[in-house]
Picture 1 (cartoon, rainbow, N blue to C red):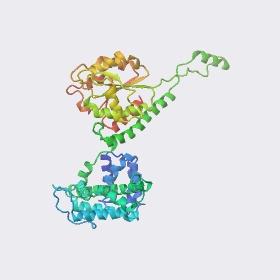
Picture 2: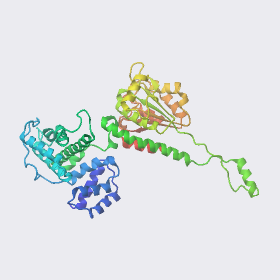
Picture 3: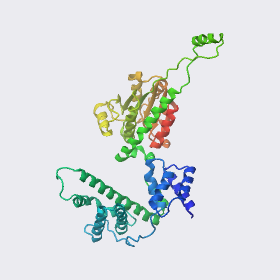
Picture 4: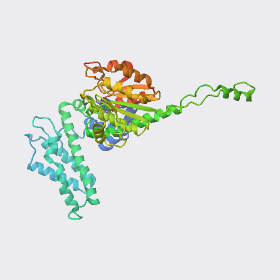
Amino acid sequence: MGLVEHHAAFVGALREAGVPVSVAESIDAVEAMRHLDLLDRDGFREGIAAALVKRAGHRPAFDLLFDLWYPAATGARADAPAEPAERTGRLAVGDPDAEALRERLRAALLDPDRVAGDRAVRGAARQAVARFGRGPRGGWLSASAIGAVDPGTLMAGLLAAVLGERGDPGRTTLAEQTARARFGAGIAAFEREVQAETRRRRAEEVGRDAVARAAPPPLERIELGAATREQLVELRRAVAPLARRLAARLAHRRRSAPRGRVDFRRTVRASLASGGVPLDVVARPRHPHKPEIVVVCDLSSSVRPFAQFTLLFIAALRQQFTRLRVFGFVDSLDEITEQLAPDAELGDALARVVREARVVRRSGSTDYGEALAALVREHRDALTPATSLLVLGDGRSNYGSSGIEALREAAGAVRHAFWLNPEPRRSWGSGDSEALRYGEVVEMTEVRDLEQLSAFIEQLATA
């Protein structure tokens, strides 16, 4: 396989992993190869990334696949043993090889020559995988190699070697902060190199396609209900631009709206200057509506992971729209706008909702019928022709009242009505799901990840 064919396979793997690469970008990368030194792997990586990667969130997937398609080596490394030792599943406490590796890593982190030190860190990582990377049942495990070396316990000794006895033991000096940051970055680099070497070895045994398919998806394809705490932090940063885009596009639509109806009196008056011939038609100025958003959010346990994300989205919307009202419900509807401050932490916001909002009054089972009826009955003033209504939930009514007539009344009173459903479309209408019936009244959209949410916002902005 030639270099161009190999590159085409690499681009295909990027697309399967969710990294969008156009034909033009792929051609740009091929053109860049003509000017890159193929022996300079880091420079080659950065040159290809400049042509293919458009978002920072796609870089981890690119790096992972680059290591598989353009590995640093094949087979056993010259700087590592040819055969790994037998593993029992226990960490190599007291193992002389592990102690030697720890000392090698310690010396690499202390090396004042950063280039030589980085090279030594990579060598230590490869040797750790070769010696300790085999799992007890075969296969290659990065956790085994990292656990055997246990690099996190080196920090105290590294700081002592650099700082000695200087400074007040009770205070954290600038020198200590700098050293901690430096050594922390080096330890993190060691762990990344271990993971990359583990993937390389695994790919040689089971095939790089199998390893690529097991790679974590990019941020925009992570299912919102399954996001970890760290991923929720990243999602919060990613949601803020979506809220700004929604606000900006709605504002643009108001500015570029066509003029209003013909102002007959002013048109006749203007025609006097041309002998009564209405050469210029004068229109009444159009008064654009101020966008208002009303959000109705299911907070029951069945959609609680998704509700955590929607609360992030709502908090981002609050930073862009001053006229936004939020209602949460389980078996009872209550307004929770005040609990969702724009700059509040997610945990604090959820705690305030649980503590202050009356969303559970009876059984604690989801009751869409009561929630939709209460919205129309008690908060009719929030539903105006200038309002966009967003309903966030799976539409599962626990075989109770669906509230379809209340939903129809609410949808008829507002300008736009949309429903975001975290369940896959194939599950709509199954069991106690009323999603298909609700979808006949308001437009229902499957939103399970950031990519689908972005597509929905594009649709809402042009509605």
